[in-house]
Length: 104
Image (tube, rainbow, N blue to C red; front, side):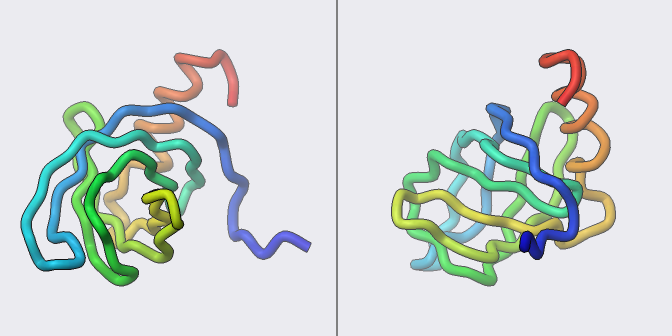
């Protein structure tokens, strides 16, 4: 049985990510959201080592939201949950996904 709070959608959306890495060094880098739900995202392509619990800023287009790293995969992918109610996941990403794919 799936324990997720909301359905997930596979996407390929470019974003900018910035914050502090596992060594407390500031960074800003492009990445790709590969999976999303109304409460979180999965990001791939970060070349920095990250830790669970870190809060990162993620920008898509003109919108920025804060996400907390929940898990770190072996290939550098990150599972993140929205840490504010202002997260763009339920609005602009879903709208962008609907426009690009017709219906998600």
